[in-house]
Image (tube, rainbow, N blue to C red; front, side, top):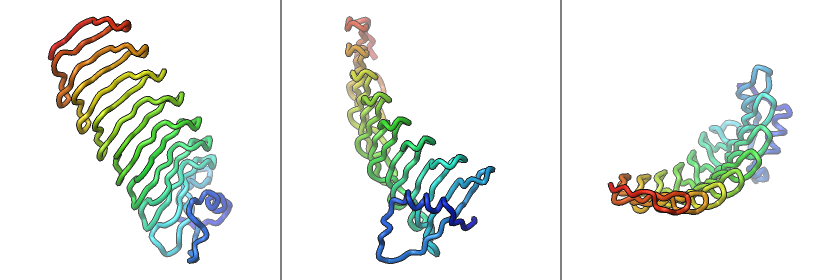
Length: 216
C-alpha cells in the first residue's frame, strides 16, 4: 500500500457524500491500493488515519472511469454504495448499515432508466420488488420476506398487458395460477398446492377458445 496525494485525491474529495463540515477535525489520507499495468490507479481510498477502515473507496477502470464508490465505517461497509457504467451513468445505488444492505436498492439500465427497485433489511429482500423493461414499463412485481417471495406475483408483457398472476408461499407456487397472451386473452388457468399442480387445468388459444383440459 502506498500513500499518494495527487489529483485522484481531489477527484475523490469531489465525490465524497459524507458531510465535510464536522466540528471535530479528522486526519484523512489518500491511498492507492492497486494499480493497473499502465500505472493507472485501480482502488483509491480516502481514509481516516489511525482508525479501522473508515472513509470512502473508489474503484476505477484502466482508463480512469469510476466503476464503484463504497463508504466504510470501522471496517464495515456503511453508507452509500454506488456502481457506474464506464460511461459514468449510475448502475446501482444501495445503502448499507454495518455491512448489511438496508433500505431501497435501485439498479438502472445503461441509459439511466430504472431496472429494479427493491427493499432490503439486514441484507435480505423484504417488502416489494419491482422489475422494469428497458422501455420503462413494469415487468414483474412481487413481495418478499427474508429473501422468500410470498403472496401475489405479477408478471407483464413488454406491451404492458398482464402475463401472469400467481401466488407464492415461501417461494413455492400455491393457490390460483393464471397466464395471459400479450393480447390479454387468457392462455392457461389452474391451481397449485405446495408447488404441485392440482385439479383441472384449462388451456386456451390466442382467441380465448378452450383447447384442452388436463386433470391432475
